[in-house]
Length: 258
Image (tube, rainbow, N blue to C red):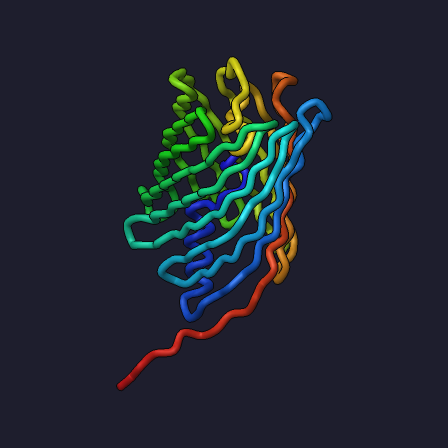
């Protein structure tokens, strides 16, 4: 689920402060393992990320499989910081095959974060559209995130999820604790159970009727993130998500004084 792995507005602001005088490039290598065996599958990703004070861009590719289906697609996105807002977006395009049939895949995601109180509380809005074969899913999210202290960030979100014409609500909450070089996170998701699984929910995991998650990140130069989630009902997969962020170097911003 996106809430587990996407960079938050606060971390974007923090990295912007650190990068105020330069540019940073990173390579992110990640994977996801789905359990139990009945729904076993997984994905692997490789992404390049460039961050600067005004914003950043990312390019990558993902390949995965589950049951008898497999898929591969490219990903492009970025974010832009402004004094009154942070805007981000992602586009994914590709396709795959399930048994003897082939299918296309596309996903569009846009997010806006607006500071409400001295850049310590953020209002977040998000819209997402994903289509694979004949399956379509739309998600609208509204949430709040707060910088409780230098070490603690907390937030919650409300979702409306439309899958092939059926709409259901969901709520989530998450708490992050950071004491460099170690970070901890945990939270839960409560959603109305989906009647049937579809290909698009295999590629972009659906909001389960019950899910708890927790994880940790450690390292300063090289950053490792591991997150595990447990879902109910049993028909939904439990997941382990892991990533390694490898720095590719940074450079100072040069100014032309002519």
